[in-house]
Length: 151
Image 1 (spheres, rainbow, N blue to C red):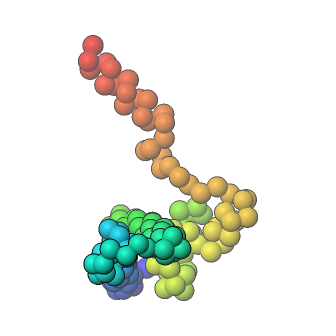
Image 2 (image 1 turned 135 degrees about the vertical axis):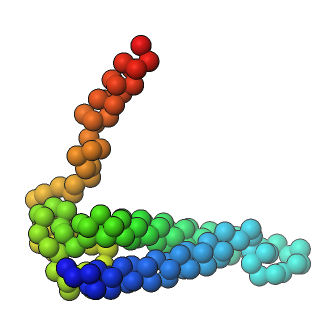
């Protein structure tokens, strides 16, 4: 991939990240209002109907679910930006083949090419969850080195 193409995708990722952060902040403000009285500005002491409370709770749960999805997408975007810095952006983590430009245009945070993602969905291959440096074996080596230095 050329430097200009990578810069194009980097700008797309930054733009999408800004949009999501703005959306999450707005949803958070709406979802986490103290009560229906605060939300409506109603200062009367009239009791609130139970159905209204249920609706408010549903809307709050729905908004919190959306915020969670948006935060996961933010994490994916941050990982894509990190891959740009590493020089591994646009390379499928599963097959090592280049990810097609059309896929990156549609989903610039994509970690896998379409073929590999399809195989993962069908259960034919498993997602690479840990890199070589994060395997439990390397952690146990680190622990033994720490124990040796303590003795």
